[in-house]
Amino acid sequence: MMHAKPLAGLLATLLLSACVSTPPTDPQVSQVKTETLGLGDAPMAKVAPDWWRAFGDPQVDRLAPQVIAQNPSLAAAMARLRAAQAQLSVNQAQDMPQVTLDGSEQRLLFSKDYIIPPPYGGSYRWYGQVLGNFSWNLDFWGKQAALIDKARGTAQAAALDVEAAHLALSGAFAQGYISLLLNYQNGDIADATVAEREGIVKITQGRVDAGLENPSALEQAKALLAIARAEQLRYQAARETDVHAIAALAGEGADAYAGITRPVPDLDAALPLPTSLPADLLARRPDILAARARIDAAMAGRKAAHAAFYPDINLAAMVGFQAIGLSNLISSDAFTYGAGPAIHLPIFDAGKLRAEYAGATAGLDEAVADYNGAVVNAIKQVADAMTQVKSLEQQRLRQKEAVDSAARAFQIAQDRYRSGLSTQLPMLEAESTLLQARQALAAATAQSVIQRITLLLTTGGPFNTPAATHIAKQD
Image (cartoon, rainbow, N blue to C red; front, side, top):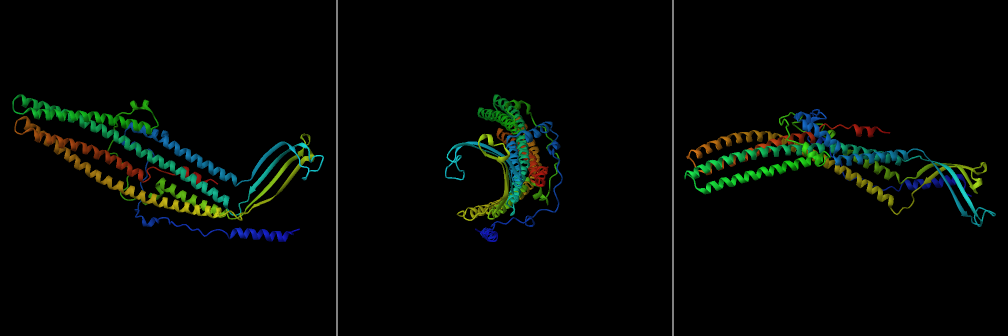
């Protein structure tokens, strides 16, 4: 019979043998250093949650909240958040004592050669038990705490993914809405071009009738008129397609199409835009914060994988009734109880734990690499948007000058042709230049608005972290 001291010594030896078997697996990827990113000294100006109201368009004020509240992709992000929060609750619950009540009743043939002697052994009897079970993982090595931290980091990342989806939807809606406005403006240009070319056809017809122009010039003018009318149809179809896209973003179907009309935004509305990379950029972008939360989750997962090399120590207890025979189950003689520790010690698993630990380390490297990529991409996005905002503002001014000059040139060429001082070709060339200048001005104006909104959103927009902060504070 083994005495208590040798048994304790054997147990200590087994525990130490488990403790020293953890592998030396180190992370290979380092997190990018903030001071090397070239961020500015000033933080981003505060942005109102309903920043789109600055454009003064009632239709935007109606549709933007719908897009944020009803878009299917946002609903998917919210579902992932609820799943992550549920997993956090599961891990937190597993850190607490567990109590269950189990009962069973079976008709058994008891063995003659086991612990139950005749007359029960060798006969069919009812065997039943009703037990209340208690268990508690003492978590000496912090494995369960690490799993809770991992689940909390995952839930934080999911909450931040929801905020990132908000910003992405805002950007998609803004782009679709300004595209609708651009196609309305291009339709206006097509209408003006049709009117101008109808005038050219009329002038040319008069000159042909007077014998001052050959019929081919008239056919040329008619061909250009037909092209302008085709452009009217093209922009009409483009407007309808934009309406379909906007309705889909708002989670609506065909019944919403008629309610989306011509946009009337103030295109020169002031937005709180930075002139240099904001000092607080990394703290403003939900995608970056989500990537950082995934690093925390991966670190906790690696810690849990490391703790798996150590023994699990639990307290277990049970109390209830066990009896042979239905009539004997609920009686004082059938009462039973017990309590004691339980130990699970990994000794040989063919390298499973080492592989899991190596996988957790690789997962940490992946999370750090993803974070570094998100940071670099964010800085590029903001820098690109600032460059485009500055350039497009200048392009708008130059294109406005081009339209004014082209309009004057066309009027002069038209007057000269009407009076017989010039051929048709200079007038058609001037009209073509005017058309191109008008379209370029409309495109530059629309792109200027889109880039200002893009810059606002790539800096994090009106983002704040109430959901993620709440998860982080949960115990």
